Amino acid sequence: MSVDHAPVLPSAGHEHPNQFALLRQRRFAPFFWTQFSGAANDNLFKFAFTVMVTYQLSVSWLPPGMAGLVIGALFILPFLLFSATSGQLTDKYEKTRMIRLVKNLEIVIMLIAAWGFIMGNVPALLACTFLMGLHSTLFGPVKFAYLPQVLSERELTGGNGMVEMGTFVAILLGNVVGGLAVAIPEVGHQNVAVACVALAVVGRFMAGRIPAVPATDPGLTINWNPVSETWRNLKLAHNNIVVFRSLLGISWMWFFGAVFLSQFPSFAKEVLHGDEQVASLLLVVFSVGIGTGSLLCEVLSRRHVEIGLVPLGAIGMSVFAIDLYFSSRGLPASAVMGLAAFLAQPAHWRVMADLMLLSLFAGLYSVPMYALIQLRSQPTHRARIIAANNILNALFMIVSSILAGALLQADFSIPQIFLFVGLANAVVAFYIFMLVPEYLLRFVAWAASHFVYRFKVTGDEHIPSQGAAVLVCNHVSFVDAVLLIAASPRPIRFLMDHRIFRVPLLGWLFRLARAIPIAPRAEDPAAYEAAFDAAANVLKEGDLLAIFPEGGITRDGTLQEFKGGVMKILERQSVPVIPMALTHLWGSYFSRIEQGGAMVRPFRRGWFSRVGLNVGAAMPAGQVQPEVLRGRVAALMAQG
Image 1 (spheres, rainbow, N blue to C red):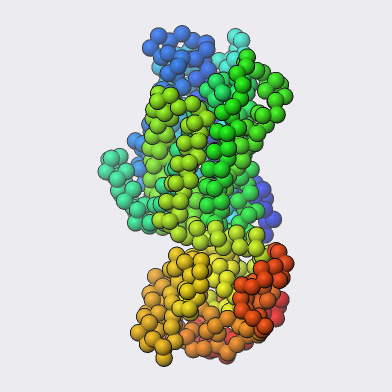
Image 2: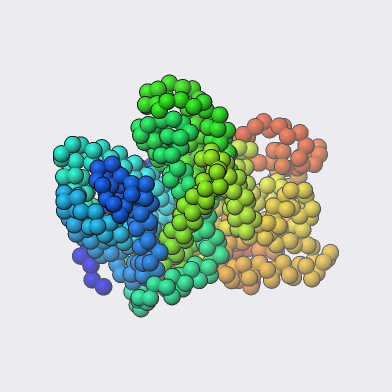
């Protein structure tokens, strides 16, 4: 397919200092502002329309109490009907072409909406609500499928964090501007009409600046039946079980967040005894929290896709949702307060802190999950996987609304609903992490490398982002494998001495990691051969395998002789070998010492002791010999 300029490729240099530098790069900035303007326009339009039919117009067939529900339902309906078709179109066609088509559609819809606002025509605006939902349905798969094509693995978390932050800021600004603009006497409707069209034009202008990226599956035949294609997309997503369960995890986050967002007006009025400004403040606090958490992901993940942050996010979401119940349930009844009176009461600051931290942890939860789905999905099917995610998100949000309504009908108070959702989040999160132990493993590795040690990784760009490889490292302590997990953006399978599985807690952790136990050939010949068969299968499937070729943990900190296990592995699967060296770890709590065993005197090296991992360049299988490999590892150890 011909395009008007060459396709953009992910940057390999990672030269920019942080995610904000992406806003100066053409491969990201025009896309970011296109997404930002679209999200702002969606919410400006919807909120202004809701205020208009709630406070300004008398529509017999649309009571004010139902207006918000009807508008929200019409907006979300296209996600259920057309997400499957949208995913196919995004995989089949060049993404810039899709973005420009969607932005052209937005201008047409907003011109109709402008006429509807000026004339006060509610049916026309309801039709535009449905069409703007269609606009967002078409853009959703493009948004998340575009980023992995233009950002490297090390940029993906930061890029997603920027998009997530920008989306919530745009939602906040759209709601605020829409509410303020429509309320201006005499000219309010005209102001909203102009703002909607102007934002659509800005979005189209920015879309024209987005560089082209190639179609991922141009030969795809479109199935126009939304029912059968929706089912096919869900089955497609289910083929990769980690990705599918991550989709469920993201959909649960939208379920969780929808409960809070839908209850803010009632919570502000009935529980906090505040006016409309207080309700707006809650939305501001929630949006700032999400944006902050989204931006923190890159900082906390060493610029990798770090799904270890997901359990941390889930824990924070539950803790602060539960505390929100306790901080809000005992507030005394009072007259309706304005913003100044509300802020003057210290008890209300705890409520706002709970909301801020709850949403911050939701950002830590969601951004790595989105990045994982983008990274692990097959590129030719990526947009259809994202479409399946949008379908599940919509279903979970609908169930969330139904459940919240049922709980209110059952005389639950709003703080009790928050408590219920916080407890349910803990149960659901635990279930997901047991189903997909990789999340829990990476959380343990992330926590160990941030709170037990000060862990510095050098040369991690040598760890391949795809394809099979053998990672070879010196063996210093019982937590060597944990630190290697923390250093690698990809899952690692370990070939480990069977005796380590007897160590309390660590044995359970390594079984959870599906480590391969190996016994000496003289002790158990069948287990010895089975271990190498399993190792060959790991490499055959294109995954990473790690081995500690010394065969045991060093007792004096020196590098021992390398045994021949790595050569036996390479005889079966000829793959690159990545030498690694852990430094400054010997003598710590989890290592052996000359005068005694491991795990005695917890603080003998102090807290947050500095350790490192140096990663060397890959060695072709044909150049690997035990002594040569040992020399490479020794040289990496000497780098300190």
